Length: 239
Image 1 (spheres, rainbow, N blue to C red):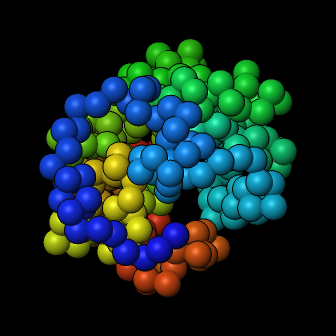
Image 2: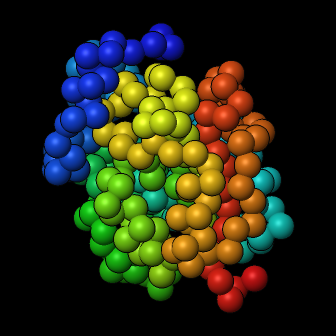
Image 3: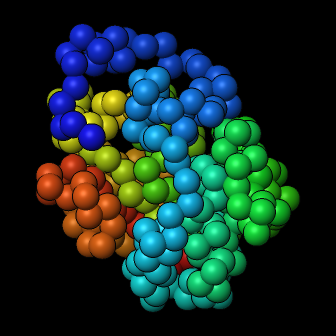
């Protein structure tokens, strides 16, 4: 993907109405023809075990001190459920939710029963028919939330999930540090690591880690050292 963006397209994107229908936007075009249609960075989004299984292993290692093998894990914004699939192959009790009916319908049959469609700002326990989760994974998902709704969404996650794991692209002066992130028209929040850390803390989590160092995650996106953040937290009172 080229590391540039047409300035006129960027201006049009920044002025785009954000009150779109999430289920309709994150459709087949978004996942299969995103680059061609100008909707996203995806093209033929598919199961790639040589990438997804190692990533799931890295998630387990990163959170190893927090008894993940005994915990119930929710992948929030799971798309086609590939991370859930990889985690389950590695013995983790993983589940997933996404706003996209199309994405959920394309999940591997081995994990389809562990996935579900979630409505925007639906309470976690309601949509999963569960009693909450020990971990919620938010990898490259929270930037899709509108500014006016991010606090509400984080508070919902806090009520339903004891611990949170976040990877998010960062911005500066109203633009993403890595210009290619502008190519996904459903990306809204462009803020630095301090902004994100405060939002997570204000939602009710005690911050366990907040760093630009993604370690083994997103190796291809680490050419810009402050382009992404890894943030982990635990619900206050649960340390």
